[in-house]
Amino acid sequence: MVLIKGYDISSYNCQTVSLNNMLEFLIQKDVKTFSLSTNLIINDKKVLFVDKENPIMYMDNFIFTQILMFNDEYYYSHREQINSIVASYINSMNSKYISIKDDCFLTDEVIQAIIDNKIIKNVYLLNQNEDKPFLLDEELYIRFKKAGKLDIKTDGVTEDLKDNFDSIIDYNRNRFLVAKYKYRQLVSGESLILESPLTENEILNLKYLNSNTELEITYDDYDNIFRLIEILENNGHDSMIILRLKNKNKFNNYLFNNLDVLKNQEFIKIKVSNQIFPLNVYYNNEKKLFDIVSPVIKLSPFEKYLYVYDVVNKYKKYKENKEDKSMSRDLYKLLDNEYMVCVGFSDLLRDLLSKLGIETCEYSVTVDTGLDDVPLDTRVMPDFISGGDPSTTHEVLTKASYHARLFVNLVDPKYEIDGYYIADPTWDNDMENHAFNYALMTHDEFNSTDRYNYFSMYGIKELFFVHSLEEFYYKLNILLDKNLSRKIIDYIKEFVDFFQQVDFDFYQKLIKKYSLLEKSFYEIVESEKQNILLDIGEHILDKTNNLVDGKKFKSGITSLYENGVWQLKDEENIEDEVNKIMEYNKKRHEFCFPTRYMIDRNGVEIVMMNAVNKFDIETKKVSKI
Image (cartoon, rainbow, N blue to C red; front, side, top):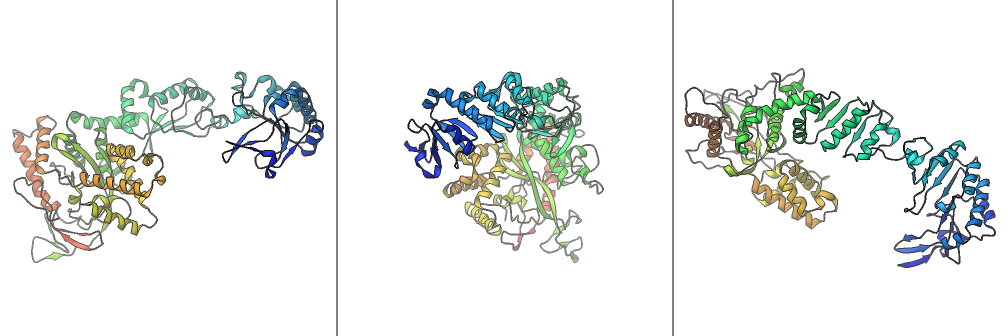
């Protein structure tokens, strides 16, 4: 490494000082800092500021401000004389602060000079040698305190001062005691958020916490959390502790295994989707939900799905509460009332499937509700409907409305099912029958419903409605053209967030192959972006439009009866009952997926023919999609 003598470079503004005129020079320059030699690395070059030929150097530049630096060897050979001069100078200083960067200067004479100088209020004793930190002890603290010093900055404090939070002890005042919080924040009573597990020392430091402080905890190490809560209880803390859940299943597993300890903790509240519930209310509602899925815990994923979907679509009739819409949408509220709309149906389905290990995510769409008041047995034509009298036609006006569905990743080797599907329990809402027409729609089936499905011009949804890589890239380019503020990397990030939620196995493969996806998206080079998009596009093609046909539905429904999950009516046998269900869905499918009209990817209205009636397992039909 190249060695540079800093004192030879004019921009460093260095001045050589002799020991004989050192006191006069200190007074003239109003020196505030004393230090032994410091070697810096600047632009890969080692910069030396003092040596044997120039043992005392004054600097006032962009690196050092009003500092006097000594060569180590020279200092120790003249230590007594130098420290005496420093003490004399400190006695006459007119500055409010003094900084000493090596403890070798801190003789009794120098310390006494600092104490005697009434102008000096701020004392900085920071040893540049990290192996020898300067620790403030109680004796020196008391001396500085009595002398009226306002701020003592040191590398640390001795054990006898660890619990002393006098404002003049800078180290304690600025020490992080619990996570990112300092003493003044712990005692303030203001709400605090803990985002990562606490060390044992941090947990013990909770003794400083104001008993009225509300804590919100966002991490999910529950052994750590309840160790924390135990300490708080012992300290007499009785204010609210909010657990913000990222993963309900993980917390529920801990909760149900520690009921005796946790169930009656009145000061613990649970935050889910920005709603806060007392722990006992949360527990009671979660128990109701677990009771729903308990009969199918040991069945295959597809069988679990059929059971839960059937429970949800006949949980209650669709009904809005116009005075308080949360009654028909909030999961815990709708468990015990008569109201439920699409958001409620989808959220209930999502929660129950999550408890069974089936990955899902919310899927909001815009649909045409102009047909909502048209009877189910009315034929829908491209631009009109026909009632019982063929000579009478009625125009149906398009009406765009928001609607909640669910995106489902269902994998079941037993039934050779592995795909992405869209579920709509609201449109299968049927209190009398087992309706599955909208249960596992492929993306082609999604486009075959009796409603307009509007092209989404912003997010990644449309990139799942593809049949080839060419179409995948074509639609991506449309989105890029329509949204000039969004770049390819923005869509990649959205895909990664989506897969993390609904296809964790594929998400892990992606981040293992492309590590920057987990670290820094915007450092990914262009060629890497194209490789990522190719992997994503190929995966989507593998997972979409994998039809779950009528034979699989029939087998899954039969299994529910054979396993005693569903009970037969009267004296019917399983085969007859299953055939009735299949026949009902076959007839209903003709009206759920009729000839219909939609907007294509270019914004053109087109007529599309009926999808395959997958519940008609006797007749072979070819889709004209």
